[in-house]
Image (cartoon, rainbow, N blue to C red; front, side, top):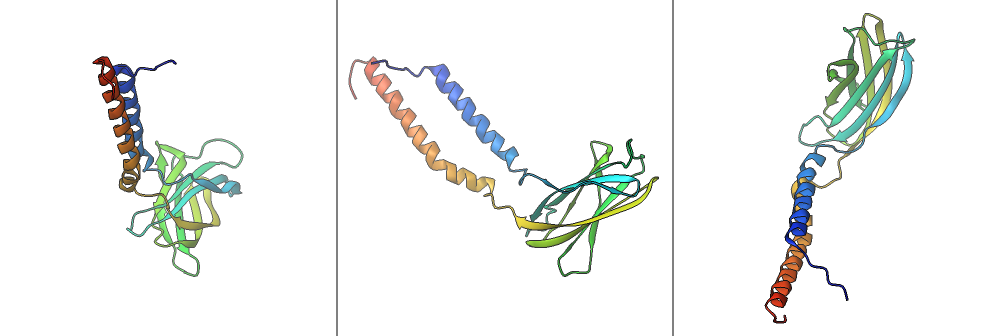
Length: 187
């Protein structure tokens, strides 16, 4: 029978991997799900527009409805520097639009981002208006807002606690057995 011994470097390596996984869970909580396209390469005026969204409803007033607008020339070329996108939403059955000016992503006017508050689940109308030297363009669509169903990071720690406890006890038992064998005794 082949016995595997757990040397110090293996335990340290396992501890570093566990710490890295736990450290990444905080950054993973920042993303609430994959965005998806609601408009793809739609030509409106002199622009070709694409809109991606991650429509999360929130109860705390945070802007969970995220929208990315990609702006290109209908024929070719990057949009002029003064090109600005505005994203507006309204719940189904409501006449009032709530809008926000999109901001360039990494200083690139052809990719713009806006976040709006979606305070309940359900259908929302979406309107994107682009203005600039090439004129005005508008595209409308709809999205279905839902609550982010993933548990909060603190709750993930609670769920992970029993597994960490079992791992700790298992490691402790292995180390006790190893010490007992090195002394010549049996456990």
